[in-house]
Length: 398
Image (cartoon, rainbow, N blue to C red):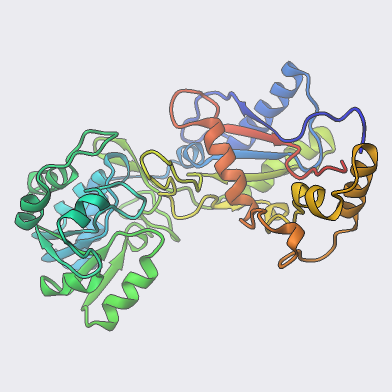
């Protein structure tokens, strides 16, 4: 190991101009990284990672749609009558504006909420309160009246919103009737309607399969709404409304599409300028869980919708503390350093099942890096929609 190397992974937020529709994003990203390197006096190296937040990608693409676009697509795909809207997440930013469009495209919504929390961990009611009420969330279906009787008004600890009231009022304001029920078995909705829009994210394929097997007439997931352009609107052919965010009171920004050409373009621009082969990815939500609020951050369908080939795969690492405490417990100092370095250099093939790899994190590179970048850039006013990660693929011997 080189004696003058004292720093491992470094994550830098890169400040960029405000991105607008039609901007040459690849040129802006590459230029901003190169300008930062010059201003801060650091070098671009092979296998550095440049990550671009999905928000500015979608913005540069102009990938927007209106509430009326959603309404049009919902009505033509679900018939405009009584529709079961099941398992939405509790979010003003993520789902409320989509719900406005859905409500404008139907006569009545039977809104079925999962409990005690939504798919990403936002609680309607605490699990302790469910236990105290003697309710079995796996089997019990609660009416709105029963829910209020048992739990009263429960406000989200972060937003202060009673989402049950909020979603109900929103649907009525958009001209649709609403009935609210609480259940975790998707088949419970079939008591009310056989036309269903399932709004869960990561379990959507299973939910749809169960409903169709149970006799549902029509089942559409959120990835089937705005998966093609409506009257010139934006769209996402793979994810539809999944991954969308509120842009204005009447408009959403969809998850970006066609991200592969962008990451390859940025990669080429950096190579042409520096001769270095960097990796590039687009990232959305990180995949981590808040220990206080119990909210799992991944409300996007994937962490990264596009990345260069060098980011395919998972880490294949040895646990240094295991080697130090077991294989080389009798060594210390330079002798220990040399033995561990030799062990790392000698590793080959998959380490799955190897005790010295126990406790390492076999998650995809893009998921790990996306979480790092999401935490680095934040979701507010940092102004760093691009993150440069250096030294991520280094190990103890580098």
